[in-house]
Every structure is written in structure tokens, then in C-alpha cells.
Image (tube, rainbow, N blue to C red; front, top):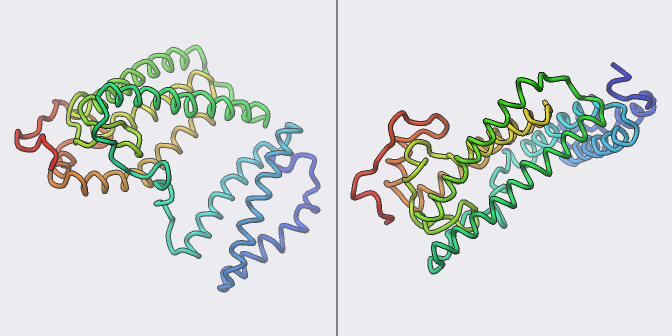
Length: 282
């Protein structure tokens, strides 16, 4: 256990600082000392970063890094709960990710071009760069688990092709029918109930998550699979409520009826068609 979590580091030397700055500060935080919350959380984040650097340089203590990442995440969540009384999920939809309608005077071709530019950027970042870094860290930290590549690679290829096709289909429907793009900063001006949106409320989200799983299968990385699952939880529980609130505020009963008929994750067996009077935005 010691070798897997701290490697060649002296655990007593680590504990000398950890006991007052985390254990002691946590006790003071529980007693109502608010500054101790920042001390305990800040120390956890610092230790996590330092241990990750140590593991990357030496190839030791990989499991300790994973444990500390979990501890840091829980500490940050606990600090938000104590200091703010909640998780500030709205911070995720500010700045460039704030929900704003696209400019109505732009042409359909401009929306399509912007949408495919977004696809190149976001797919490149979330499906190539980040999985590559995660898989590299997994190897360097000694966390690699052998997976049956002869079975998983063909499954990953098929899943990636199918889900990429679904994502492109949804992107084309959004940019040609909605007067906008999938990006929050240039959202469609019309509610899109066409193409895959007649079967599923969030086809692009489903496609993106499944693409992440497919990449994990292709590279044989369980950490990339965990990354895809974590991304799905963040989107579903922290981002989606704000997106649907924005859609309800802008499209009113039109979106409410659509939400009641088309599920978020499980596709309908038959495509849903809106009533003629509900196809136009208010």
C-alpha cells in the first residue's frame, strides 16, 4: 500500500505537514472556522499537484495520485458547500459558455461553417488531446490494466463511427434548421425538432459521451473510459439543467411539450412530430 500510494517518499515527513494543514484544519472547519476551510482545501490541492508531478517524474505513487485527485475533488465540493451552501454549477455556464442566441442575420452557410469549426475544435480537444494525455499519465503512473484489445478495438471502431455520424447528423440539423449552432455562445434561435432530435432530446451529448467511451476502448485505457463517464455526469447534472431552463425561457410551451414527448438519453421507437402550430418560435 505504501509503495503504491507514496512510492519512495517518506510518509512521516508528509504527515508532519498533513496532520496540521489537513486534519487539524478540517477539525477547525467543522467547528465553524471558515478560514480553515480554505487551508484544508488548498493543502489538498497542493499535495495533489505535487504528488502528480512526483509520479510523472519518477513513475511511482500512481495510485496515490488517483486517491488524491478524488480527495481534492471532494474537498473542493465540501468547501463550496460550507462557504456557499451549494455547488456553484452556474459558473460552468458563464463567459464563453453562457447561453446566448446566435446573431439572426447570419446565413445558414455561416452557421454550418461555424458548427463544423466547433466540431473540429471540440472533438480535437476532448477526443484526441485530453484522452492522449490521460492515457500517457496512466502509463507513466503505472496504472495500466491489460484489456482484451482483440475484442474491444473493433467495438471501439464501430462505436466511434456510429456516434460520429450521429453527432454530425445532429449538428447539421441544428445549424440548418435552428438559425444557430450547438455552441452555447451562439445557440439556435428556433427550437429544432428535426433529424435525430425527433428521437432524442440530446443526440450530440449522447454522441460525444459515446465517442469518449469508444476512444477509451481503442486505446485500451480504463482511465479514458472513466473520463468519459465523469464527463457525462458533469453534463447531465450540472450543465443540462441550465440548458433546459434557457430553452424553456426562450421557447416556452413549445419546449415543454417537446421535453414531455422526447427523452434525454433513451431514444423513442418512433420519431415525434410536433403539432403544426408548435413548429414556430414565439
